[in-house]
Length: 113
Length: 286
Image 1: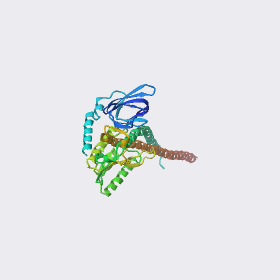
Image 2 (image 1 turned 45 degrees about the vertical axis):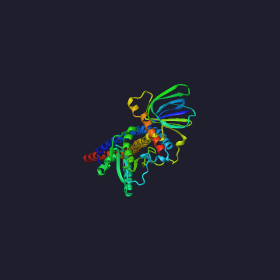
Image 3 (image 1 turned 90 degrees about the horizontal axis):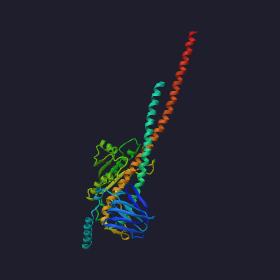
Image 4 (image 1 turned 90 degrees about the vertical axis):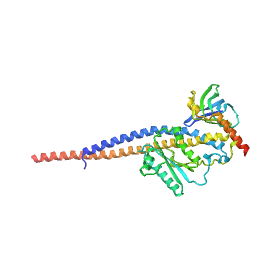
């Protein structure tokens, strides 16, 4: 499965991986080959890749969006590094509780209409 | 005929100028390479953002998101002009300013008010000299524009658009086709042009919800569009400067050749004259 980690300044990583564990907004999300197509927000945390030769690769990221299609996973993020990120860039992302609140608003909206 | 010494002085001066233009050409060439790399590297992110926006967006969000609104009539538009901080790049800045003037005139004719926002000292100097009201100014973006700069420039415009103060945002910048061809172009940044209009969101699981994803994604989309325009503009500037400086260096070479001939002729004339004088003097003694 193809993985690409893309920041506005360029592609940070591109390659094949057996499995991916990515930090979605609400927790780690495991992705294997044939995962259902999915688009979602990224939280902050570790992106763990298990490459085809079995070796692991870890990136730290905070905020952004990911898209999983049948054959490829794309992660778009402003903050990513192979070193742990400082607190400042982690603070810049949306708060999980806030998202839950917003989601409740949306659900209420839909019920009322 | 100018004396040989005067010609010699001019040759020296042209040689000095040629040295400077050649150096500037070399500097522009190396900066151009870095700038084109950045243009290329910015592409994957931009393409992905656009494709995700298309997939998440559905027609019924148009009313929900102020950034997606489609004004029926354009009452007021913001024109964002991207120029360079420095000159000596041929017609680069002049072409951009001309394009912006045409756009401003067109908008005025169609009864639209305009706000002019300018990036780059050259554009600011031009409009300030003509006492044209400038809504905002940004200088020193530099040769390596950052994503943050792009965000800082576009965020207020996005807010004005959301609140209904302005109904459109145009960006006047240079398109980087190649180092030789950098024509100015106008990008209609807002309102965001309708995507294919289909509702694609069913194909994907969306987490948390399409609304919340879009809320994060739309500002990223705007910021990235401007970032691309900025890096392309820098690359175009360096390309234009390299071409201009190459022409200047070549011209200096032509001038030098001409001057060298003039100098040799003057020198030869002087020698001939001296010989004639000696011969004349010797003849007078006999």
